[in-house]
Image (cartoon, rainbow, N blue to C red; front, side):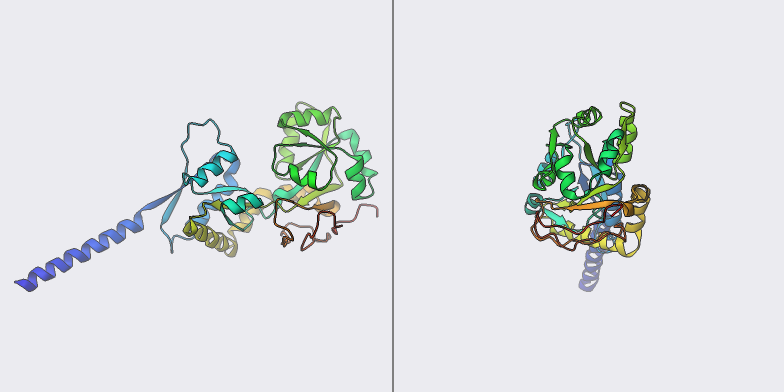
Length: 314
């Protein structure tokens, strides 16, 4: 009699254990983000796939939008929510301050492409750019327009460019068209669409055809300092996506055409120091970097001369 009761009890406990295990395995972990609109589709897909390919060692997870009463959450507000553990992940350009406050997963999500900048100019200014013979002439003879509220404004300021700041995005295009400055550096992933959009207002703009800037300005996944488990999972997931080929294919499908249109092999690429990154940062040559252009493995000092592409006609 006692043996029968014991066996029934053991069976009940075993069934309960398996029920708990199955429930835990089927439970979906929500991963909250604030950057949920279509502008961030590229990064959202990488996040979902990084979680998907790590389900064998972690729980199932679902990327979900943080519900807020705010009409539009700013980056600053998103970082505040991350610090408060009300969201789980943000994807933003890194800085020394952000890496001190949060846990960065140091794999560039866009392979450093955010730091590659082409110039919007007025069409009539191309002849003046054609006469530029060295980096110093570009710094001293040409005036740049840029938004002083953007994080990488400090990059151009630290590299001694002649700046005309404005705090309003749309105003910069009007200032360029009215020759208040000579050029406006824009990211390669945004310059083509901006050119089309603002040509409706001013048909005198074009993309300058000789120059480009590059500075170390990668976009990372960031999590709360205490969320080591999620940080390790995302790093593992991204490495698996690199190994299985998804990362490269995803990058190429989104940015391959823009890189080809830029004709980087024909440009003089000026490598700038980013004062917001740690000193003596080791640089990894991006897969999209043109083969005919020297890529520095390290930028020692803002004032050092960095090897870059030769000028056309040299």
